[in-house]
Structures are given as C-alpha cells and as structure tokens.
View 1 (cartoon, one colour):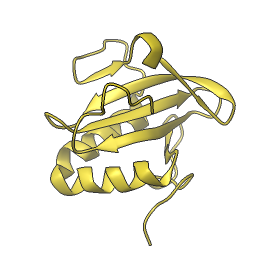
View 2: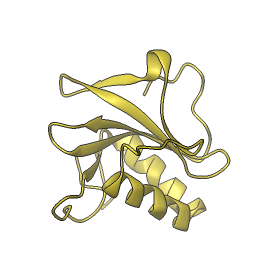
View 3: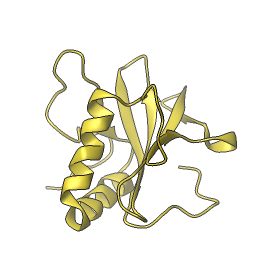
View 4: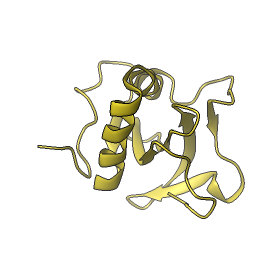
Length: 119
C-alpha cells in the first residue's frame, strides 16, 4: 500500500527530531518518483527535514522560499515554507509546523514546480 495524506513518511521521530509527513497523496506519489530517480539524495533530504528543517545557514539547495511563497497554511495554521533541491530539477517543498514539530511535505517532484505552483 502506498502512503497518502497524513501518513508518516518514515518511522516515528526519536526525541529531538522532527516528524516528516505528507500533506496530500500527490506529495507522497511525487516523493516515491523522486526516490526512484535519486534514492540517496532523497534520503539526505529526508534526513535534513528530520534533523535540521530550519538550517541556521541556508544554502542554494536548502532554503526558505521568499515573497508570496514564504508561508503556507496547513490545518488552519500558517507555517514557513521551505524547499530542498534534491536533484538538478527535483524538489521537495514542505511547511514547517513548529507547534507539532512536523514537516508537512506539500510538493515533491522530479521536475521543478511551475512558477504558479503555490503548494
């Protein structure tokens, strides 16, 4: 059975780590495609979300989005939106839910999101 909305993206987080969950079924499906294309990089992205979802020093591959994409809403709560470049085109976007210590994956694809994609 494949993962879906609200499902855990990995085993429960140990103390001091963040949960990583899918915001919707499309994100779960996209992450599977990304993992098939770049397994090691997808694992490293998951590990970054799990341990340092809000890095103190941003990089071109792991950064908070800007402007109108800087925030998103999940379950009625406004959250910071971050992105990890997994491959040259592949991206993972997630909302950082500080209250629940959870990263909600909102976009995962082997190609970059369209300019109008606000997920």
